[in-house]
Image (cartoon, rainbow, N blue to C red):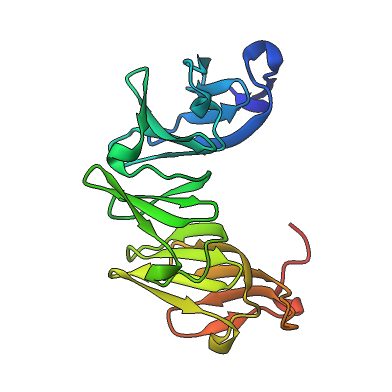
Length: 231
């Protein structure tokens, strides 16, 4: 891997413990957290700090995030836990820890930690316990490709069966009938103005897909002329 230090590009490699990088995450204090095949790393702007495996493969997990208390959460195929005061605390059945692969984390504006779990759905952490949300609660599908939080506290989920929004304790799902360019939603993000941006690919029903926006009332698909010609 490489990064900038004092305006210069600095390379970090196997000798520094940087090998097979899984995820990068910027912490609440601006520090950079890195999950790798060799364990967890933290870059404070000057030095790399390695926490190794600490005898737990969880620290090589492919998902990483932070909660409002500043704890570093790591998730992967072996479960979920948080890193605090140089110790790893694993969340098992006693706190409703997920039984699948943790794919991603998201912190909403209310300080609630969310995660997506492959083949299961979504979960949020509240009062020391993980609460599970699946298709039984109205989620479009357990195949979640992306997740994003809105400024109003809502959480959006991009799935293979449409776009789901969790707000005020319930799901609302949007499909092509509501104006989406396709039900195969691969990406979702919310900008600072609260506009939801949705990336779709062609679906089996023949919809072509494309990039769309949602202002809370109407979905608008960008035409080819409205798309940037270069990045």
